[in-house]
Amino acid sequence: MPSTSSRPGAMSPRRSLPVLVAAAAAPLALATPAAHAATSTWRVTTTADTSFKSTADVTLRTAAGATLFTCAGAGQYGSIPKLTSAAATPVVIKTGNVIGTCADSHGTRSTFFGGTPAFGTIGYTATGYNATTGTSTLTGANTDGIPITVAFSTADCAIYINKIAATYTNSTHTLKLTSGTVSRVSAGCFAGTVKVNDTLVLTGDFKMDPAVTITRTTT
Image 1 (tube, rainbow, N blue to C red):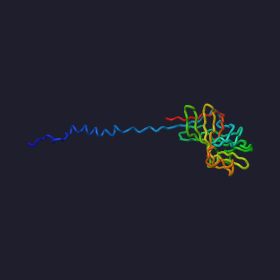
Image 2 (cartoon, rainbow, N blue to C red):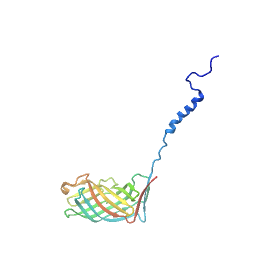
Image 3 (cartoon, helix red, strand yellow):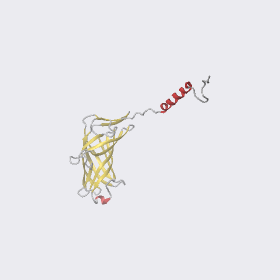
Image 4 (spheres, rainbow, N blue to C red):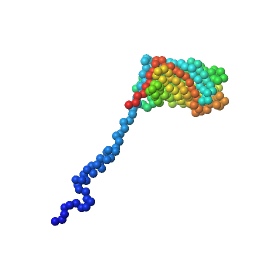
C-alpha cells in the first residue's frame, strides 16, 4: 500500500493555517488609524452695540523710518459682527469710514481717508490667533473689489494703500495698525522714494468702544 505520509518538505494543513492567518493580519496591524482633522472656530463677542467709533494718532513712515504723514486724532468708524464661524479667515471688523487731517513731512496739510461710500468697506480678516496673549493677527483690505483701502493725500502727492497689517488684543481692546502695502503713488511724490508694492510702516492704536473679544478655539 502506498505511504500516506506527506512528501518531504510539505507543510501539513493544520500547521499552515496559523501562518496564513498571521500573514493576513500583518497589514491590519501596521495600518495607522485615520487622524482626526482639527477644526477651528472663531468667535467675536461684544458687550454692547456692535457699531464702533474710535480715534488714534496715525503715522505713515518708510521702512527706513522716514516720516511721510502724521495725522492727529484720525477717526475710524464701523461695525463688529457678532460671530461664530468655522471659516479659516473670517472678517471680524468692518470699517465704513476712515478720516483724518494730516501733515506731510514738509508740513503741508493733507488728508487720510478710506472706507467712504466711494471707496467701499474695509474688512479686517482674522488670519492667526495667539491664545496666550489673546491677540489676533488681521489683514485689512477693501471688500468691494476696489484696489484702495486707505489713502494719504495732498494737492500734488497721494499714496494709496491696498492692504493693511494689524493686530487686535483682547486685554486692551485695541486695533493696532502695523504696516501698509502701496498700490499706487503719484509721480514724483516724496522725490520718488515711495514705490508701488513698498511695505510702509503704518501705525495707529484704535481702542474699541464697546469692548470686543475675538477668540479662536481648535478641537
